[in-house]
Image (cartoon, rainbow, N blue to C red; front, side, top):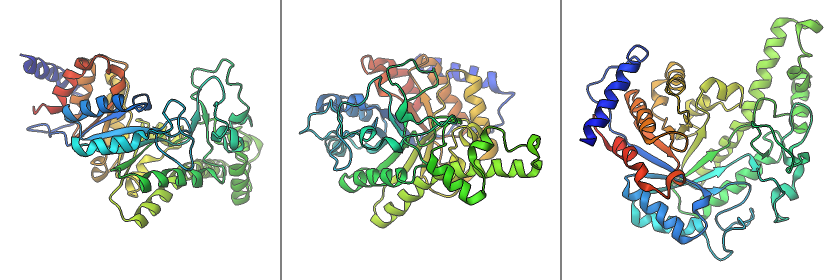
Length: 393
């Protein structure tokens, strides 16, 4: 009976989108990659790790993204990064998870928050935290204000996510490179999964190191571009204005991409089978020009093994618009490297099932669920999700 309800709902979704989707199929492809994010909240002790991984295994997930770096701290033993204060100093969450995964037949991908550094309303207690030791590495906005000068106790705008490291700082990417290298050298993981590999928003990315470098290359202060000083109103040719804007966008994008280039170099030298993946903004155009996250380029250059667009909207139209942009711009060979990210924290299980079906209808044969923690106290909530992941239409 339940299976018929799922199929009937699927037919309703087809009817709803039949005019806006181009497709031909005799059978929807079976899902190859069933993935789930498990956040750092579940990595405090053995009991919570064991519960999460057993659920993942018994539910048929084959890839688990385990958040081992959240806000500039570590849920593993590190010589570089301070351990999260909630974890016992004698306990290594990542080591335990990797050992447990060997008996559960699941892959462990170390989920790493890259540039975001802190988001609490008070400074880190541990004075060895990088926010204390290297405040000049933090991001700078279009008004010249460094994140290190933010009053964390004050009211923030709804769009504020936290204190970020700046990709334009000359030392930040090398630091992150060393942080990530330590993880895959010390632990037998299957992959590195990168999150927050972007700027906080378009009005960030004006660290003085990057401004100076761009000025030396093109004899223009990027602030003059973003503040509209480089414009025809002040005598510049339109062709030059357009050209310098493109150069500045590319400059910022390339600073993010540089980190991936570093990781690829290092992993190739290590000669181990470790995949690189990234959680990315779902609207391809916004990702590139608002967050300067050029993940289409990453796919084309094989800098990542796969990406997961965080297509989290509960709205079907928005969800499908993001998919259409992907399919209209990305080569077929690279579409195969996309695993669709679907949220379960902001919608009903039936709504999430709709998104899973639409992703499969559009020939995406990998799904990632965000996240286990959203319903860990009521695991039966996931039942329709699990059925839709395993259903062959």
